[in-house]
Image 1: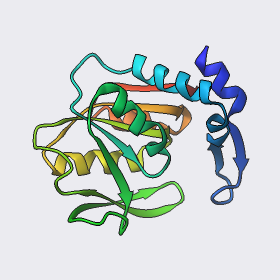
Image 2: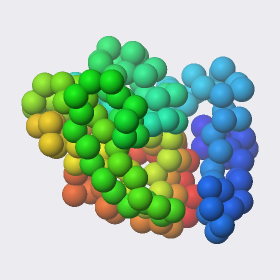
Image 3: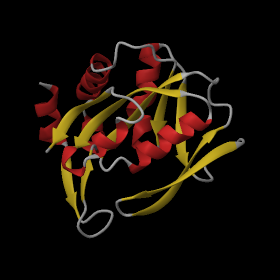
Length: 176
């Protein structure tokens, strides 16, 4: 099963990026092309049945599989980036995460109003970055078709925060 395969390669990095945080490192997944393919297949299998018009990936690890998801779905890919990284006119959203404050951006012309957007990131923790992403999408007139994560840290209750935007929340691996 994909969850056991992933748990066998995802490594814990204690006290990164700050004291008390245990970072889940997905880079060992990238060493195995077959496992990468299984991740994409697993994410695709977990998607909601409702229509998806666009896939948005959150910087930076959300780009790794988000673009491939978009390609496999035959949909456009939209990068959600840290402030100052996108070259065109942007819309910004500030937010708080478990180890500081941040701002993310999206191009103002990333998709047409009314688009149903699948949000992808490698990991769901408290939900701060994903909520900010969801608000950006709504600012542009889009709606959240669902969320697809590789990892969910369920003990941080981020999943509960996302239900206000979409009931379709999937992850390949959960840590209770």
